[in-house]
Length: 212
Image (cartoon, rainbow, N blue to C red; front, side, top):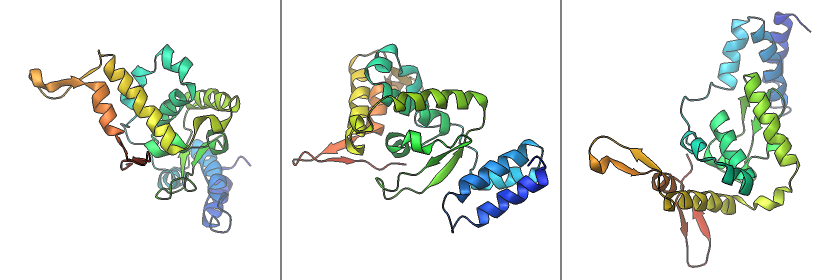
């Protein structure tokens, strides 16, 4: 089906029928992307309503320079999740809980962590470029080679991330400039640790801070 008008019609029909079958939104995006690639402005507008363009900045961006050879070898899945978060602007909870293999639909990611994180909503994230597709393929292959149970639950994954950031801070050398003057320079690792702060109760239960 190469006609943009027919592709647009298929996409709109699938989107309207999504309540009957949840994965119709994936089909809708597929056809709308096809139509948009052939110059359909209506299809492009529909795509932006269904899967809004990602914001310019994300929480994981400052972490990318910290993905050294050491973490890539010692914590490859954590590093991959950080990379995914930066590339597709996932929230912290989405990045840590996403079933990467199930989420990958080729042309988009189905980001659905409702089973583990009740406050979340199912949403689609478009794979927009060949570079994103190549990086996602590499990350999916990595997750195919390991047992998902090795990562533990959300609490354990969040604690692992915080611990890694804490070690980066303790190692020194990571600073962030905030304003001017000598007091404006503070350890970047410490700043990032605060963003992922967790509270350990006497019962040894870790309660995650608010996830935005």
